[in-house]
Image (cartoon, rainbow over the protein chains, first blue to last red):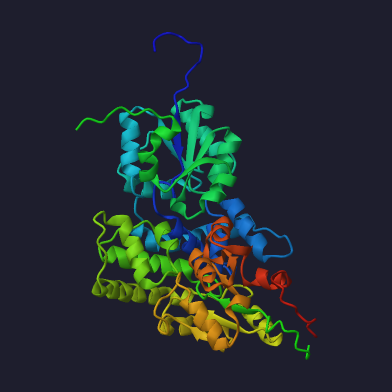
Length: 237
Length: 237
């Protein structure tokens, strides 16, 4: 403190995924994609959509398509755009039932109080992200969406951009996410990964993808935040 | 064959769960329960509902309630009945989008062709079960629902009743299900358990609950059915 130790800045920062991590929107997204794909003539089991959600849109569509098209053909950009438009419409029908996850707001406010830098980085687009971020009733200093990066998760760009905009070291950052795509992107960015069960993955799936700890939801993470090496002051009042 | 070996009847039988195992209905059920609970003033994260679905209705409601009520109070029968009625209404809105899972019909027809006895045993009620069984376009000889047994899963009654009605030995039966409640009920019935990923659980969750093999969905099970020790003849045509 005040004396240059030669260690540089080793304070941790938290980089959060959004859907399934801070807001309870994964299942609505999954069923909206199911309807969109079916409307486009692509019949896919719902669990397969669930396990691929959170990827970049282009990867997502082609990963799903591989399950049904034996010829290895992919979707062209027009088809991907149409699917996205269908999904956006179906999701809009149910977005009114999306809620913040338990503890999300408390966690973010506590981090602000402790001056721990945090950001949100999502594979979703900016319009959609800003809509659900409002549910948190906390304004993030940094919100990175796929509109700002060339590649979304599991590429590392979103988390690298979030750390850059925060002015923190990515190797001192902890990525918090609910999907294996978050954990893979964290590994590729050389950040640590922490998993949350609130998106519906199993704990072992997240651990195998690189999560060094798994919590139930933001409330559970807040209750155990010392396990991440984040020092909290006693809250007054 | 024809000579009494003293070994008794060791032919295998298959006892199937319904939702998430033969029909792709878990996610719709989950969101219908989420709406029902919210309407009744119970706010619960969706993944917690997902992980408890497939239990008997009474256990399910109280297991969920424990997550939100700190005083240990449970729901009375009137409250459980109201929740069920709300769920039934919300689920009815989306049941038109429920589909049979890939391979479900082919698997059941193949078992009939090979004279392997099979039944369906579900924690759901008879009306709801009969509605989605129609999607399979195969009439089960035995369909056991919670209307016929005193306790649903993870109690063993449903699978024991199914084996009894088929006239097969439960210890030679293989329970196929998508949830840990199926696997626990299988263990308590002294049947073998096989898991399917099509309900959205992770493979390790099913294995830890006792699944000795896990497949993706009915189509994947059919493609590997020899691994269960079920001998198939070569199909003609």
